Image (cartoon, rainbow, N blue to C red; front, side, top):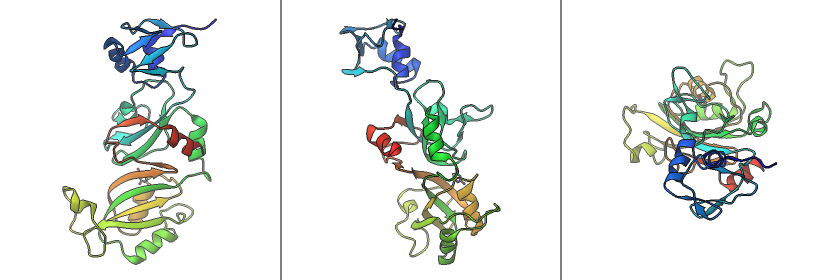
Amino acid sequence: MAKAVRLDKFLADAGKGTRSEVKKIIQKGQVQVNGVPAKKPEMKVVPENDVVVLSGETVGAAPEFVYYLLNKPAGCVSATEDRNDRTVMEYVPSDRKGLFPVGRLDKDTEGLLLITDDGMLAHELLAPGKHVDKTYFVRVEGKLTVENIRNLENGVDIGEEKMTMPAKVEIVGGSWEGAGDSQSGRVRIENLPEVYTELHLTIHEGKFHQVKRMMAAVGNPVIYLKRISMGPLTLPDNLKKGECRLLTEEELLRLKG
Ligand code: URA
């Protein structure tokens, strides 16, 4: 027999928001069940039989897996729970069980983080040997010399058994002549050192603190770090710090490629 579920749970499981968010949406009268406005979050629906419409759009049964893209702000940890710090999960507009961040960004690192409950996909993206390219916007102290760039591109010693795999370096800004059109020149940033370099660094592996350790190894410590892409996913310009949204169908197709 088809199982009845609460309307707010049905909508939350379908990725339409957290339980408390969808409750408000229901109470505002934005949801119709079988053509009749529903005002009670506790109302029961049978997903196989009832037609639930949210703001004019029919809501299907809960997908097997959900995929969120977060622009992680600094100050939270990439974990599902933590005793001392805020976690990235606080930014996900869902309380669906089993969600977790795919990989880790340090507490002070910002940028693209995928959050899902699809363990197989996470494994495909993270398993050693299957690591996908990740590109970071990195601001470092000092001038990144041609020799340092060559070292990063060839592999550096970060204290592991092997040198790092070849990386891609593109200088995108900085304080010194020839460093390009500095992002920091357009946005006022506090406490910038007199000499700094901004680069896009693409790495293939995902070792602990890898970017910071690579840059420290060439003598240019990181002062700011943001992930701007992971495999086929790119951090959208319009996704503000702390904002989190479901992947679009196109992004999902590219990811599952
Ligand atoms: N490399 C780092 O050092 N830190 C991150 O958060 C990600 C990559």
